[in-house]
Length: 187
Image 1 (cartoon, one colour):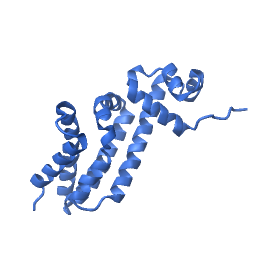
Image 2 (spheres, rainbow, N blue to C red):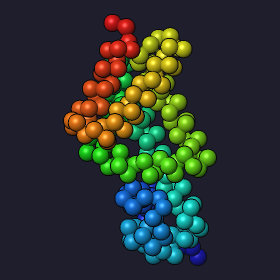
Image 3 (cartoon, rainbow, N blue to C red):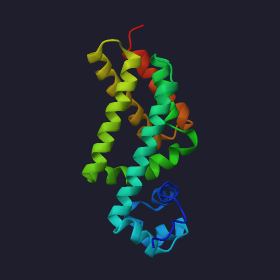
């Protein structure tokens, strides 16, 4: 008879996502993951089979969460340039920016190395740029270009804030996005 899970897969992956963000993918062992989850290392081995499979499952879970957050922000944001800025600001929680900039790059490296995770990132980028683009132009070709440009400005603003720390993070990102809108979009 199979044993009943004491913690759901989703709850487990949420706990492990926090831990992998804290220690980085290269330092996440079954022992560390088990301590963070409150389970025995053998239990995690039974669920994931290998450390690499565990890391991939955690990062797939992170993409699932980001997909959901993006869809919710897309559904809620107005269909104009201000709505595009608001959509991105919803994906930029003020209290998580510093952590994401500093530790998120370690996770991003894993996403780029793993073909399945890289495909998830590419698909998310396409959905995000489409959501932004339709708020910026009625012309499909122009919308595609502008959507990708705005996504690039957003990510660049986050990275440059990480180096400069010249203002509150959300304020710096919003200012960069609004400045880009004023320059790139016709009045």
